[in-house]
Image (cartoon, rainbow, N blue to C red; front, top):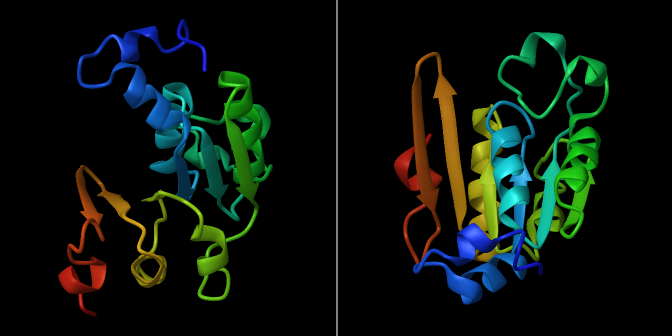
Length: 172
C-alpha cells in the first residue's frame, strides 16, 4: 500500500494507517454498475478497497450516460461490469477487481456474494433486493441498500450485528 496515494485519508485521526490497512484488506461486492453502482465503484476504488467485485448483466446505454458517470459514449453497447472493471483498474492498479457479466438471481447469489465483507446494492428492482437480503442473511454479510425515484432517495444498512433485514422492513 502506498502511503503517498492515501496520505490524505491516513492523515484523518479516525482513519490512520490502521484504518487504511483495513480498507486494503477488505472485500466488497457491488450489485449493479449503473446510476447507483458506478459512483460507489469509483469511490471504493479511489479509497483503496483491496478486493472489489462487480456484478451486472446490462450493457451501457446512451440514455443512461447522464447518471452512470463511470461510462462515456465510446462504451455504449458494451458490458457494464467488464467496462467498469477496465476503467477502475486504470484508476487504481493496486486493487484486485473481479467482474461478472450476469444478473444476480436465486441460483447464483450465494456463490457470487460469499467471501465478501460487505455488499452494496445498486440494483434497480425489488425482486433482487429480496434475493440479496436472503443471501446476505444466510452468509452473515451486512449490506447497504440505496434507491432513487425521481428526486427522492433512500439508503439503509441491513444485517449489521443482528439487525433486521429488508424483509423485516418490507415483508411483501
